[in-house]
Image 1 (cartoon, rainbow, N blue to C red):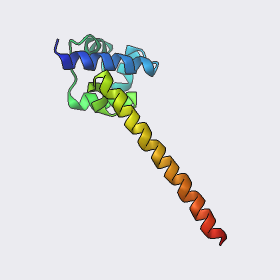
Image 2: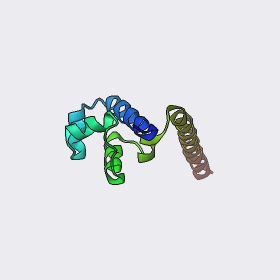
Image 3: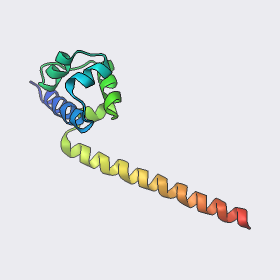
Length: 104
């Protein structure tokens, strides 16, 4: 089994469990067989890009996250969180400024 297969298999299993899905439930939502999900998690099968997009959509992640090593995910998650905080703070500031300008 190649390294990318191992990383994908580990991420698939972890994200599926994080979403509280059984292999059967994930398979049904992706219109795949339970056996295919099990084989991917065992590193025996690797999905096509189209199937990976379908799986990622059900797991509510971007497809590339299924291929990231654990340390890359932590860094990326921090960057995403920082971006989200900045966007939310900007919205809040814009709202306060707009309210202030209306009162003048």
